[in-house]
Amino acid sequence: MTVTEALAKDFPECRAAAPSWLLLGGGLDQDRITAELVDGFERVLGDRSAVVHTSELVLGVSDGRLTLHDLRGTPLAAPELAYARLSTPRLSTDREITLLRHLEAMGTVLLNPIDAVLACVNKFWHLQQLAVAGLPVPDTRSYVDASMTDVLRAGVPEPCVVKSVRGHRGSRVFLARDTAMLHDIQGSLNNDAPYLFQEYVRYSHGRDLRVVVVDGRAVAAQVRVASDGGLKSNLALGGTSTPCTGLHPAGEALAVAAAKVLGLGVAGVDLLFEPDGSFTICEVNANVGWREHLHQIVPAIAEACDARLRAGA
Image (tube, rainbow, N blue to C red; front, side, top):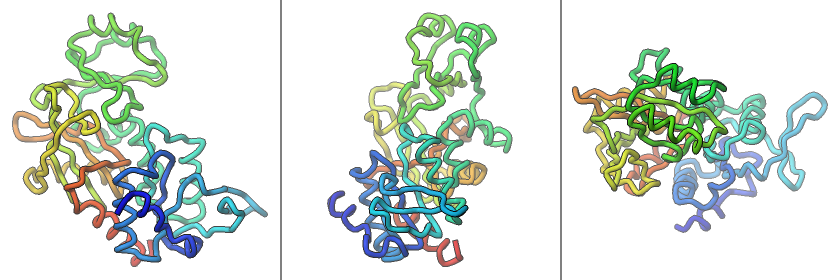
């Protein structure tokens, strides 16, 4: 089934009555994962689910009550449950988060709640929560609005992995061998968001363990390796992946714990390998991507929605 064919099956005739929504943000209409999710939701949930695009909704307040309408002015009931697939770089508190707040206030249960989504958008937010919960994360420094010179003078790990708190798919991530290098390049950095200066786990250079967690269960795992010997193993940057579900139980258990701390129903947890066989949490993603061979993920998400509907969401 092509993406276009899958997205055509959005149950327009029963959308207002569907108890669950697959909610799609802008920029995600035509990708493979969206097509897989649409097809999987149809097979498991049938007419109990509808595909709804954020661009199709009008939010309102009328006579002191929250309302939802489509672009034809037709009133829509808020669903009992929604799984929102939203583009991380485009995510805005004025747009997508406002919609999620509106749905929650109307009684919708979000598979990935707002606070969990926001924590994943900002890489330092989820490090804060994971560290407070006692889970292993790299030593990290960040800042609010200090100058880079002052931050470096205060001290950062050397060498360190430098990341924008709002980076995505490996963008604005690099390895700095020392503070002298950071002093040299600081004028070239985009300062629209703060950066993290994170302990470099040399043993895991260019590779990590990505675990996909759905409703408290590790449903898939893969080792990702940078294709050029570089630092970043992101598949979007050409990295390769090898499925390894069940081969790293300690890592999978840590990923499940991380998703639970953040409150995520669906999470992609990236783990760094340590020399003693343990793992350190690199980061957690709410908008999860996966390769075609990980067939178990979509059924797991659809079945999690089905179980929640049967339990009254």
